[in-house]
Image (cartoon, rainbow, N blue to C red; front, side, top):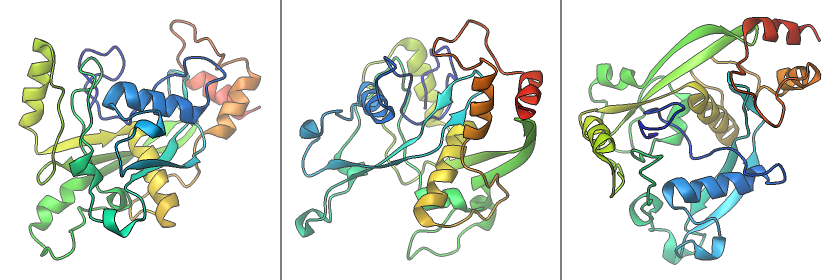
Length: 253
């Protein structure tokens, strides 16, 4: 959950990440650096607490934000290796994040496969429970974006049964946000963050979602067309924001 004091997307759920410091910085270098700065995951593998390690898996196609930023999802697996002695080690319980209170209000987890499902999935051994409560997991709607129909996903991640990490040092305003988070039963995950998680789950499980969704991966086709128009320059100008006319013009190139 992003801090409420940030200029962009305050208080919203997000994946660790941010802008490259320089054009030669690779997406994985940016992702690792940002994960270190925001949640304390070392960007040097030798400094990751044993027996944990970070395995780089792949990069997904670029996504395009309305503010003309291209977002490259980088997929990695944080795990404790293949040794039998380490099979019982739980990353979530043993490798607690260290948060930057200026940027992060809380860190929580979500069941990865559930981002393909319409309802909360039940852990092995649990009974059906309250079906009305399970249906609170997903909501979705079609919207107009990129001159096409766009599926907006809204997931509501249950907080019960997991450890939510908060910053140790925070301002009065940030403390108020943390107190508000304590009152919630679910955290909302939506927008580009939700789309990236859905696409990553589609790839990881080789399975399509139960809900309606856009079948294409990322926005690289429209990004190429916008670049031909002279948009999406390395240095973003104040006030740059993609409008319907820009997307219509790009669709005809």
